[in-house]
Length: 293
Image (cartoon, rainbow, N blue to C red; front, side, top):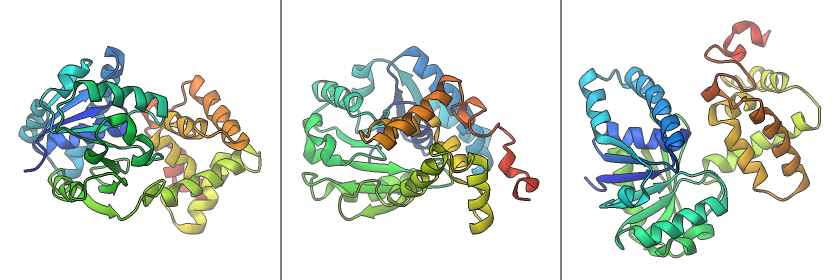
């Protein structure tokens, strides 16, 4: 066993999935949230992941009970960091939010604690200076629905200790992931370096008024045989995540896209999590065979 006590900072979609899979795999996992409300939302997410993991692994009630016993929640960062072997930062894609966290982390964490970022858009070198331990820091990225889409991308920064990335090969396998070594820093790692331009092209078609989201998805699905289109992907990852990514860019097109996503978020249309985004869940239109006709 490598890292045993794992703290996940942030209980959003991916943070809660990472923490649950760590607990399901026998790690002692803690979800740290910035408020009681955020932890309540994290617990509701975990309840959904538990059902999905149960079905995917055909897990017994004994295994599910053991996972719950390994998973705890706290709003106290000091408690969350106490004795942690590994901290996985999975906070919103906002550099100020991450900077504030890392600066507090550096004050409270044991000097030997390893910390990684799950950021899908930022590099380790963008954040390393805030951690106070650039040699013990790297990027560690997961795909959504991690029990099924189980890649774990490992990407060291220029100051990362040469041996640190290798330790995440074993850890990834211990939590049922397939380790993917990224040999040099790349925005978006491997997955999002391919996925983001795809989503960006679809977003541009939408915000320019070229076509409606459902027609963009339909075109992609029919032409490629894909089980979902880009706007179904947005619903899966969450429109709040899409907003944060676009809002973090200063160009006019990104800001306009962020505005369009914000309008939907303000209407409560966050995607799968709230039951409605570009589609209505749990039975979205794109799963109906008639959708492609």
